Image 1 (cartoon, rainbow, N blue to C red):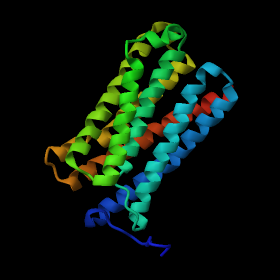
Image 2: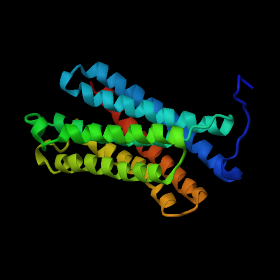
Image 3: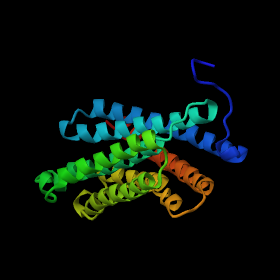
Length: 244
């Protein structure tokens, strides 16, 4: 015992099998996310291109926040610490990935001019996205896993993903930049965005009345798939660093 925190095995939903799978999945995500963030930081230092700095910073934050999600989830299994707000952390990962995809689009040779004029009110939309993440994190921390907050989380995740995929579609449709490092990085980030989105979005099933334990089983599958996709993106960052 350390202070008011007790350490031991705390089963999720009194289910040893679910607890084991979640523990393995979160450890996997934590390790891979930490490596992803480290390679993003090393790429940022090695590239030295000011125009790409924001992109690398977003990717660094993706790795950091995803690792935090894994760590707090592990703490819930090995200690009495309870972190219901961790769902909001994955929502933040989805937003950061969407913004990273946006930055990929802005950094592409075809899109370096007039980036701020993609559509009117872009910055207002992004501020609203940040407000959604804040509302989910602090709302769940204070009130718990209430259905309105879970609904906001799920809809927010889908909105963030739609925003990111909109920029991704515009980028992949640009034949002039296909085959470049930026284009290759985008194609590795989109699967991560897709799987990460499904982790908070599947909570919409809880709102619809599906048993919470069933939802947790589905969520951990998407967490593992997110970690797997993040691993291939990490390999891409490592290859890019080796080529600089």
